[in-house]
Amino acid sequence: MSYSYTANCIYGYFGKKVNVFCHGKLDYIPYGQCGYITDGDWIVLISYESEIFRYNPATNDISFEYSQASPDYSRTTARHVSAFCKQFIPGMNYHAIKKLYYERRIK
Image (cartoon, helix red, strand yellow):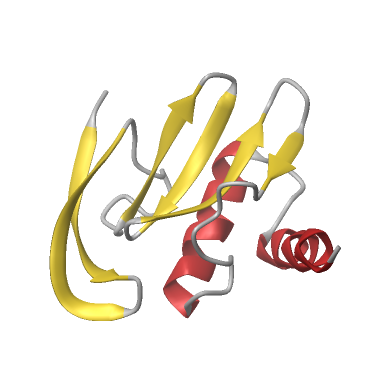
């Protein structure tokens, strides 16, 4: 299944509209400006136009290597992170992802 939406906020600038194509939408935010793509074994959260993080269900690993924005970039992005966790990472939530992001970014 393919899914696309028009992102209205790109890298902090409102009003610039870009079509974003994803493999699927998030079940808990079906009309949001977010979605996910698959890249090999990884499931990638896309919020607006930015990659937030990647999750590998086979190894239960979370990667911020290609992250273009932090999980707390905006309140809406935080909601996207929560919805992604509900759908793909049982037992994880926004606060745990945010903490992990800053722990890994500081090192």
